[in-house]
Image (cartoon, rainbow over all chains, first blue to last red; front, side):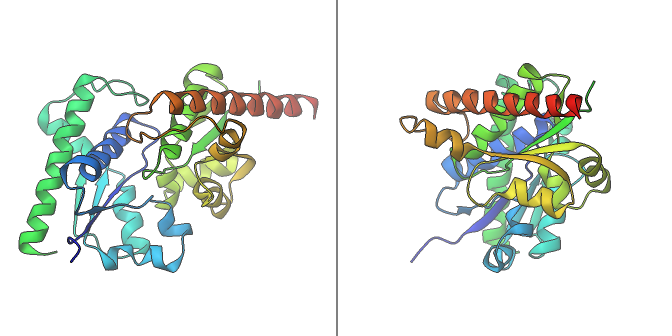
Amino acid sequence: MSAPKIGVVSCSGECCDVGTISRIATRLVLEKLRPDNTVTICLPLFSIGESGERMFAKYFPTIAVDGCEKLCAKKAIEKYSGKTARSIVVSDLLKQGGVKNRGPRRELNEEGMEAASKIAEEIATIMDDIFTRGR
Amino acid sequence: MSDTILIFPCSGIGKAFGTISRDATYEVVEELRKGETDTNCLSLLVAGDEEASQSVKSHRCISVDGCPNGCAKKTLETSDARLVASLSVMDVLRENRKLKPKDVTILDEDGRKLSRLLAEKIASKVDELNQKEVVS
């Protein structure tokens, strides 16, 4: 029997460093923290993809990982696919953690990578909570 | 002076090609054609952000896709953007078959080489478009 899956969908966030942190945190969950339990999808596929791709949030409890307060990932998932199970906003978490110097958007510095790791851990904790308590 | 050209890379997160498209875009907007080009979040268009939607209608846009799904190009098309060119990581990959990028989160050496080649291709396209603008 295959492991239960949770969708983790990051904003693309090309214009700012918080987008880079969102994507890297999502990749860390997928590659290292919860590789057997994580599925992801490129955000634009919700709008331009096939109907199967639009069913993503119906098939899987889905966590939106947004870089900023514009909440593109959450809005796009809920517009095209279904209600998100949880969502996080990276800029809020960075503010809470006092992280200010993350490095450039193209390549994060050490502090930025450390912040991405912490956010990945936060996502993994949320996944565990969904497994325990449900959507 | 021509108006700024907006470059939209793909948002791909599953393979190295998305990372390459973004890295090449940053190379162009921050180094090779700084001041002539800029980028924005593709997800703003997906989410229907009004300001971003207006921006792609009023500026020339280039899509840079990572895979045959063509999310960047299609998203710009559905946003009625002023799309003036579409490029793809696959074009550069076909011309450089020995390069086999694997790492997604942080590009490996082959990924960086492809990114540099793609960035040069994008920069050439920017020059071509700006030249046309001057002639016309």
